[in-house]
Amino acid sequence: MPPADEAGGFFMKAPAVLIFVLAMGSFRHQHLLGIAELSREDIELIFHRAEAYLPYCRSALHRLPDLRGKSVVLAFFEPSTRTRVSFELAARRLSADVVSFQAAGSSLAKGESLLDTVQTLEAMGIDALVIRHHASGVPWFLRRFLRCSIVNAGDGHHEHPTQALLDGFTLWKHFGRLEGLRVCIVGDVLHSRVARSNIALLRLFGAEVGLCGPLTLVPREAEQVWGVRLFTSLQDAVRWADALNVLRLQRERMESGLIPSLEEYHRFFGITPQVLAWNPRVRILHPGPVNYGIELTPEVALGPNAHIRQQVTHGVAIRMAVLSLLLGVS
Ligand code: NCD
Image 1 (cartoon, rainbow, N blue to C red):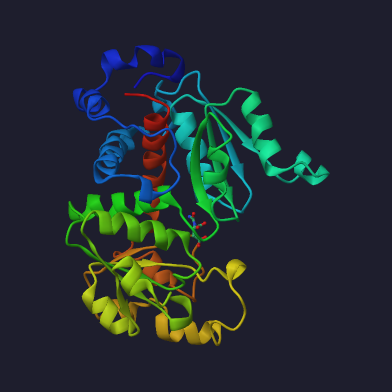
Image 2 (cartoon, protein in one colour; image 1 turned 30 degrees about the vertical axis):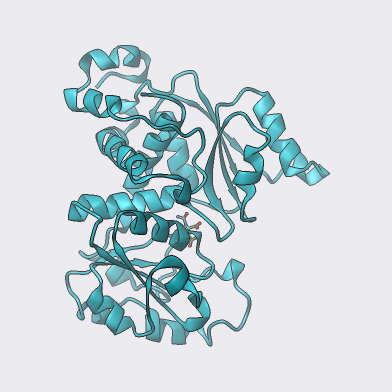
């Protein structure tokens, strides 16, 4: 592969399959705010493009020229490791300029509003703003005022579309389909944007979705509103499912008193080798960060059923695909 500075001539040497995938279909969105705004065809386009980018997402030696001349700003107002770093790597692997805005130490501390802050960033000439914020709806609010592309990297407990895309992509690569698949989301659904985006994506593809967790952490209306199946017994859920998407207890968004204790939660809903014995073929996903000994044990997270590391790798490819499609690489 050519080094970055020779990458302009890359397409002369690119494999035919990559050129074919980059040329197929068209993506008509300026922003990626939520899964609810995407069609099945949009998501298939993202999956195919991510698959074509996969061999190029592991090393800076394979930098592609697709976003040369574009600027991407990452503005994370909540903690993040994998989402922020993978967006940054994705943009860099496509030769974009990337700036990470640090909320701490910025003029927000001097009383500047969020809107003024992002409008100031936009006035410097940016093509995409990747934003994570603790308030649900912030990316939709900003869309009314900004001309650049906005990518939602997680808003409150509402949506986290690129996480659902990488989870769906991981299942699609393993099973070869999503239709008819039985996926159970286990744990703190109530506070989870990952769960909401996953449910929307899986239902769009005709997968069956189950939810399993303490009644205090699974919205009661889920069955009717989302068309999912509720499980109160982990054993029933595990026997039913092809894959479990295991969630962290998101205590930063949780009122007290929703679970008796972490030990009790682990006893009833923790995924352990004994739990896997109920269905040895079940696949395990987790968006990270993992709290070992609560929702999952290290043996399960590092064992043969888990796709957790693969999800992280897929996250870079999915974010490369999303950025290139939004910023008009056809
Ligand atoms: C998730 C998030 O931030 O919503 N993590 C992630 O993006 N990889 C889930 C979580 O924090 O538990």
